[in-house]
Image (cartoon, rainbow, N blue to C red; front, side, top):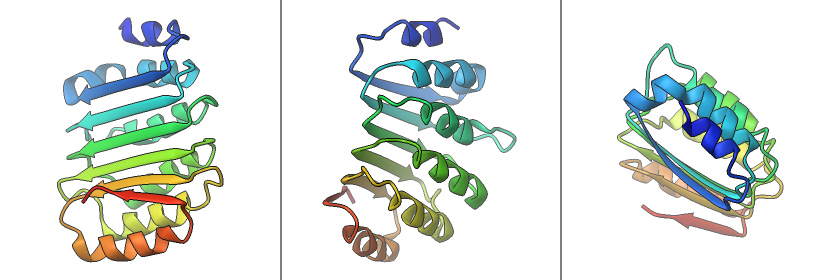
Length: 163
């Protein structure tokens, strides 16, 4: 897979946007995530479309590798049909604490975000001291949306909700 090498060699890139589909991600997640950990882009957007596999550790891999990159200031992650358990959510959020992020975008679709996961995310991301903008989107969780937004507004200067 040459994509990982291409990303690593592209130190001039300021912004990277990538879409991972199930077939692609299973074949090269380690290489691509390692390359993203070494690039100098300040803004990274990753969209994962139906990439879940129960024996797969991709979600943690993303966090572990990206947290090695000290250049990222704006990170957006979009998960479609990606089922995430609470233990993995906790681990991933702890990796986010290693970033020096100013802006974080999290998008969850198709009921893959449980109330327990929502609270884990809520408790962990408020610990990111440099973060002043949170963009958060999820579907069909209206009651949770209100509570979640009220809780986070105390921490962030700017909370953007796209629901």
